[in-house]
Image (cartoon, rainbow, N blue to C red):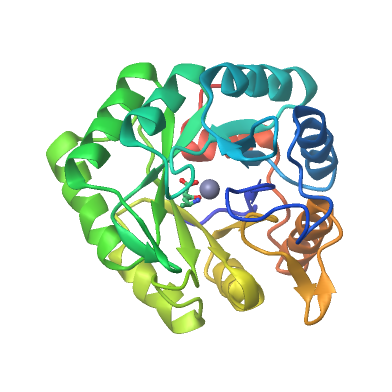
Length: 275
Ligand code: KMH
Ligand code: ZN
């Protein structure tokens, strides 16, 4: 489904980088809320959240997740999406427990993929369980796709389990992960042929694939995810200053493409999150 506007999601932290690589990586709740406000101001409508613990280590601590959801709701209008992907080392039961923090949306990865030197494990039974629990709790999934075969898994899931909470199917193509699909125009085109009918999609390119993926997705009627989770260099030899810099660039390109950043209310309707 193509729309006039562009849904911009910011993924500000992730589980893979630290402040020694990017000093403005938001790792405390205050930093995350400040980033969220800045990014909302320049065009983001949704935030994809990974949180950190007291030592800035990736964590799925439920108390912290609940506090984070509450703080983001209090300080922004952004759609709050929690990661159930976590870090590659996270256990399935901890990833499922994330849903107890009751976000608007949560990520739901459609298969196992090599992830650099590690493996990001997503067994079929686990995927089904995540999908069911999200539906039972009214949490809207964003189906994360790291490789083309995962789109076949998404179709299998929807065929066997029926539609998700909210009734819409929204997919995020995460491209350019070493071990996953490449981040280039040909692969975006191939992915679009495999999308379920009526699905909306956003795309993000890791590292050097950031710009080719962004420009292709915009031209193809897709939406954008940007942020330090995926991109720590703004240009060759230039570190990203902060997440708002990445959102502002995406918003500027979306305007040039005559598909300006989508207001939050429209974004909620697009992916099926209740207003
Ligand atoms: N950190 C990656 C292993 C998600 O957020 O759902 C998984 C990830 C996907 O980032
Ligand atoms: Zn993530």
